[in-house]
Length: 346
Image (cartoon, rainbow, N blue to C red; front, side, top):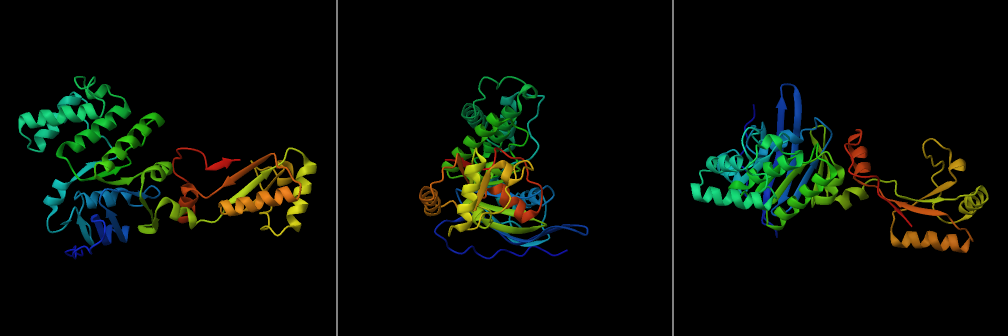
């Protein structure tokens, strides 16, 4: 088995790096889970790792949080070399895994105090920290009740509150909102934004593409053990073709006039048959025009409609979203969706 090399000093940047990984590799037997991936996460940002089930997201989190040993790679977390000083890494991080660490047999307050004891906080300090975090996460009323009776959202809030007892500057959140209802998920988003506003770095894995779109400063798509693409949400969306303007007509005469005018226009060629639930385009009475959704292209299409004397009953703009990116890069079925595809009705 290869050994992890001591990481070289991180190059100077305008923003310090909370996490860096170069050539990270991990195999289980003949199965290569992580095949030489590179990651760089600036301090005080949200970095999201996306990928289909089994892509290696949780393995990456376990390695970077010292729970599993990598086969190879230069790894640094919180300015500490992962191989040379794992204890210093553990002191700098907090981890909220896929499955709650909350003990349901004791109260929320007792869970917090237990975590304070594990961090070797003095008794008075531990009680102060526990009380502050219970208040911050709106758990004061439930603090004296057994955690087994908490809702899923309350358990998740308690889980993250327990993670924060040691005041970590880097937090790993492995699918923190899986199974939560939409309201609880939005509450969790607010908590994550507050953490980042306080300067905490969040390494987030998620099955909800809307979640990554809402929260992440940078996103990496992991597929077959490798990073298929990395960038901001907007940068990733631009690598996928398929943006278009969809014109819908209520009458066949208006549709046929528009289709004829479009063939004679200098606008981009319509995309052929537009299907809605398997309905051919001439029955759906809609046309699609390739477009990047920019203001200039939209104005050009509207000017053409005016000059041709055509009135569409509905105009929608579709730009590729993270669902499209995920499918294009992984070839997988799209994971859980927080909302419908982004189409703006004009």
